[in-house]
Amino acid sequence: MKRENHFISVLKFGKKLLLSVSIFLLFGIFSSGRVFANDADIGNSSISVSQGSIPADGSTTSTISVIARDSNSNVLSGDRITANSSGDSGLVINGGNAGADNATVITDSNGSANFTVSSNNSSPTTDTFTIISNDPDTITLGTATVTFTALSSPTPTSTPGSCADTPPGSTPSLTSAVATGDNQITLTWTDATDPVSYYLLAYGTAAGQYVYGNPNIGGQGTINYVVGSLSKGSTYYFAIKAVNGCNTGSFSNEISATTTGGTVEDTSTPTQSPSDNISSDTDNQDTVTPTDTPGPSQILHMNGVPVPAHVPPAASAGISKTKIIEYILAFILIFGGIGGFIHWKHQKNTKKLRNLDEDGKPQDDLKQKKQHPPEEENTEKYFSE
Image 1 (tube, rainbow, N blue to C red):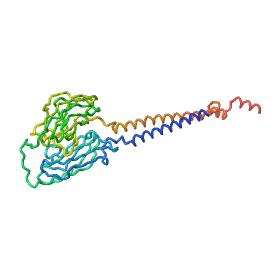
Image 2: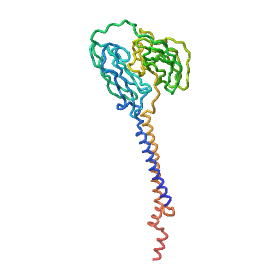
Image 3: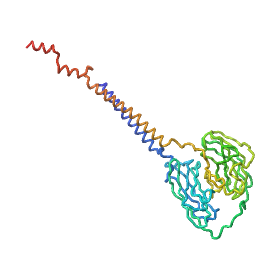
Image 4: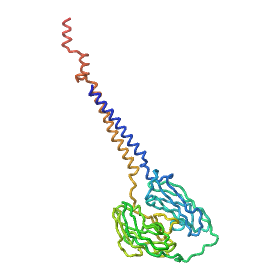
């Protein structure tokens, strides 16, 4: 009996321990909020507009700045943010084609995405932009409004290629590219001499072929920049140029780095005009539109067509919600099966022990003997009478 009671106590303790561990793990996973941390959160994300009202002269711009954060207030790097407009035949977003009604920007390492808007519509209009996060689920973060006012007089037609701004005094020089992670590289360069409004970045996966970029990576005095959302284990080639107003300088030397760690110093590639769609001539100056306030928008427009700053897929932000749910279900099934087996074994052993007497013999046989005594005993009893 002592052995039976001990065995039952052990089984009860095991069941309680299993239940406690299961509840603790499930509570820890869900209370941490990591299952849904990949989605942008409306309350923690922010949307701001630099100028709520600007003239519709085609050159004055307003910047819509978005910072994407999740439910834990963590910034979301590599998140695709889309701005959908209410419709304007003269609307230009990030220097793209006139009449575009949407644009998509990839957030940088700070979770920031910028949309520079202007309009050449002769009629006054107010455009409403709906800001949407697309990774991993589609979340509407809010709206931003910009009013484009009519001009008091017709805008004079400018001569293509004309620019009164003085070009930068010198060309910046890239000195190093450091892979600071699997998906980002930090660039360092020497500052160009006055006048400088901001710096432009262009890069790609082949030397001299720059298909990605950022039209504004910081104003004068900026000497480093972190390029994020890169593909792991890939080599990238970078070049920058200084810009002053509508006039640009020449591209710097080219430098390369691989996103697997390590430092690559100046490759001493001669200054060149890359054979891509990013032009340093003032004839195509409208292909790059600087933001009013420094802040990377992670998008470059080539020949008026918006191109994402990074086409290769960004690194996964973590285990997906589906995977985590699958792991939880598997955990419940495994431990539930173990608990069911232990319970079945306990019931079986308990039933077996209850059918034994103190000497370990089946009680059913004793009952049967009492009910049906041996025939010899009955015969002796008969003759004795």
